[in-house]
Length: 228
Image 1 (cartoon, one colour):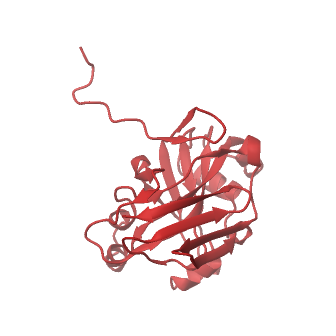
Image 2 (image 1 turned 60 degrees about the vertical axis):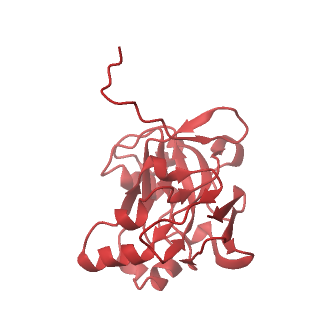
Image 3 (image 1 turned 120 degrees about the horizontal axis):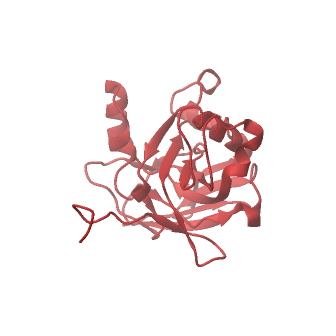
């Protein structure tokens, strides 16, 4: 007899490059406006804002290669980001120990129903309806840090149908990966399985059904996502 009153939801996992094993996802934290040029294009002054985070759901991550255009929106935007996968965690993690908790890195898109997000901003309400919808984080596999190191510079770019939309460098992050981990751990108990989305460079924009998005981070990898 089962000890659960309903079927147990499946564990969300991501493939790991170079192994048949899977990375299980626990939580997904996303930092906002972490590239100065993107903060400016969204109408904010990056020099005056401390870091802030919102969350997506683990099952928003989708390595299938397809992005279904979501309902209730006519203005869906791409945001290309590097994701960080933790292998351990804790609270109040010292800055100089933060990278010790990283298992690996990957590529992901923070797809956003910009029109719905904008409505929530105007009313001072949470962003989940614009950010945490189904399959809103198309992504690729995890690349272990043991294989690629800890990338802190390198081109991050995204094209739509061959046209360059986003073109930045990881070294343009306002808050670096160790700082994000340390800061988050002051407010949450981080743990193995946590994913951190590290923000997007300038050039975010709308996509349409039939578009093909290609994202690449030098020294990490590349992914291709079809809008269906």
